[in-house]
Amino acid sequence: MFGVARHERSGVKLRVTGHERTMVDALERPDLTGTWEEIWRSLESVEFFDLEQVIEYARLLENATTAAKVGFFLEQYRGPLMVEETHLDSLRKLRPKQPHHLTRGRPRGCRLVKGWNLMVPDEILNRSWEEVS
Image (tube, rainbow, N blue to C red; front, top):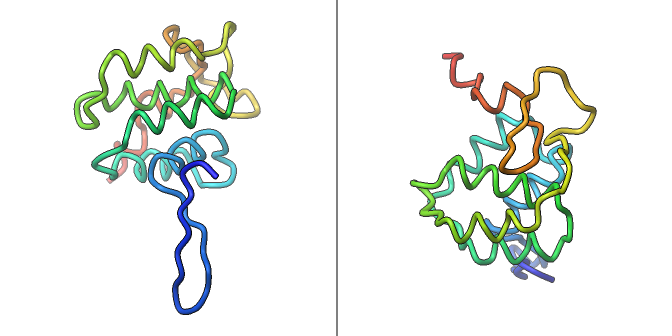
């Protein structure tokens, strides 16, 4: 299984995903991971991702919307995560041909991020949770 390590703790065998798979899975299925604020804060707290693994896993899923979500996230953190244009280009090749929503249910207050063909809620674009102290 891609990005899964087997560990044993207190006699219990566990399967644990690495940061790279966890990132892609969280962006693909946010309904299983928490609010967008929780997802964004959790992912931005990771100091390093093996970007080649992130791209490889996104490619394996064969889901254009997921590839766009991953690309959009990485673009937001280009500097801190040392994301190069070649990384983004790899994901852009996988993006949807038509606009897709980042979130399910087509919420109001979304804007098209053309580079990813992704309708992104204003809450995420503006990181509205950072306004609350």
